[in-house]
Image (tube, helix red, strand yellow):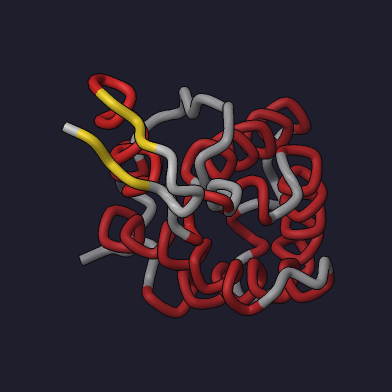
Length: 155
């Protein structure tokens, strides 16, 4: 088997197959770097931590939901912060591991109404906006976190 290439030279045997596969594999996308994960596009774990810090400030100022948070002891707030960072980091393709309880277990018996969940989401969106997170990444993150609603809101 021989393949002619533009130089007019012939490549024989196994080299022909290797050349054919190499040329067949050449396309525009193979020269592009792999797509960045949402974690990377958000700026990595440090940027996520910064958004979470802003989010916690927003939540504590939100009169719709702050009663659920403003009496937590400092150690519990620190654990909540770490869990949020790890949950977002892991959910967006980062290197973190979320080790907290399931959303269903963590919110069992809290009787959270839809209005409180919506206020929390609003606080997150405000925090993302304050950090200039682009719309595409904001939407993608909300789509990652959104399915947790069914385990958080009282049915």
